[in-house]
Image 1 (cartoon, protein in one colour):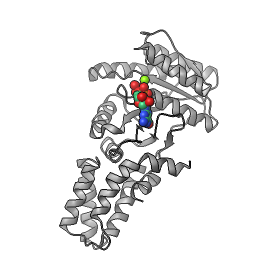
Image 2 (cartoon, rainbow, N blue to C red):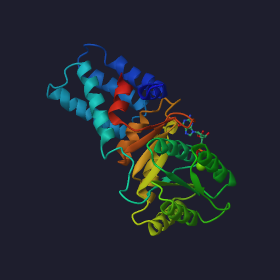
Image 3 (cartoon, rainbow, N blue to C red):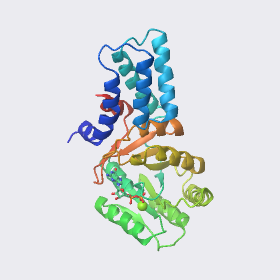
Image 4 (cartoon, rainbow, N blue to C red):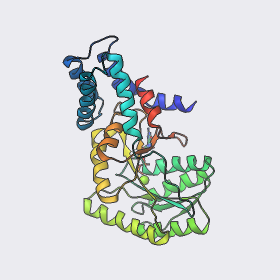
Length: 303
Ligand SMILES: Nc1nc2c(ncn2[C@@H]2O[C@H](COP(=O)(O)OP(=O)(O)O)[C@@H](O)[C@H]2O)c(=O)[nH]1
Ligand SMILES: [Mg+2]
């Protein structure tokens, strides 16, 4: 299956909701008037594009219509596609890569968002790009979490650094960074626990992991990747805001885009949190990952 095909099938439900809704509003030759704008607003909101982004997009369409740049429904559709692609591309969507020494990627997110699975897929993707990877099992909260990451390390044939359940996550992160440097790895990816008891706990734990990683390798972590579950729609937006406050997120991994009609949330998350989407997850298998391409995403959404 080609890359475009996988995204296309992964986005099938979102496409039918978002593009289907928009297309039924933007029928061929229809004039751009208040009725059209109202229907457009409704269909964007229904697709989880979010209130702020929807309002923004509508303002831009209104402005275009006032200046006679957008005259027909076709103009509006082309404009929206272009506008959404531009917003999603802001900030750059490439994963960080240092010139020397391992690039440290700290992965965070709430329980069940798909962190460990996404790490497994990201590792496979990096291996295919010719990079070596060391994994750090800093989700020491449950034994099962370490086992799960171990299975992914075996599938990918990469080293994993782990300690006993209940060990200090920051100590594991430190060891993983040192092991990565000692073995000349290109990437060290650190899994973390997804507890979200209180914001303060989370901040302390993630903060400590970050500091300790920086002691092992100057400048680390080079990427703080937040995994958000796209099926939770606007909740994912709220989560992303919260994590960004405490962990200075540098990139988003949007998981579970397959099987959701709420893929429009990708636009809302990027827009509201101001952090670029870097990868999307399109299933539970090792290859169900794509580096995020804003242009392609917008094209597939509207085709
Ligand atoms: N359909 C689908 N399921 C996913 C995807 N990513 C993760 N999952 C599933 O989501 C569940 C939770 O994933 P896990 O990696 O354990 O989440 P964690 O608690 O954040 O580490 C598992 O059943 C995964 O197989 C995805 O992109 N698509
Ligand atoms: Mg996990």
